[in-house]
Amino acid sequence: MNATPILLLAVLVLLLVCCRSVDSTADLAPVRGFSLGKYLGTWHEIVRLPHRFEKDLDNVKAEYSLQENGQVTVVNSGKKNGVEQTVKGYVKFKDADDIGELRVSFFRPFYGDYKIIYLEPDYSLAIVTSSTRKYLWVLSRRPSISDEKLAECLAKIRNWGFDVSRLQYPNRQ
Image (tube, rainbow, N blue to C red; front, side, top):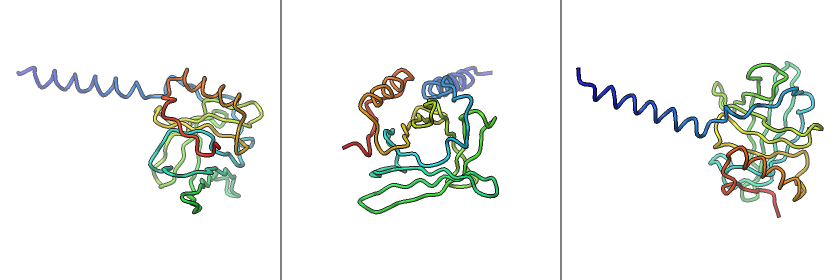
């Protein structure tokens, strides 16, 4: 039997595993003691990594609501060239409801990871990622945060291995 195809397959699998682990956020724990009730409401996007679905959007915010049927929804909105854009999504917990790790769908039945890796005790500021370091948002209850608070967030983000040189500040004047 020729070992070359098996060796090539093994190398390919190793490369895929290594490349995936570099971007993975498996090493970043979601917040514990999470309270959905405290998280509901409006969050303003302060910082983000760029993505095609947010290209040229500013004044971005997310409104989390609990519906009468128990379903949690999120309405993301922002302005693109002065025109309001909105999209509605559905939220569920990934595991336990006291862990800040959610699943969000804007295109059912497909869900994406939403991992809250930092949350102020008073729920005034959050840092959120996904299952990879390609996604990151700093969210605040207010449309802006102080330079000092921003510097604290950037230090955390850098220490967690995110590429801070790519960050966008959609609402910063």
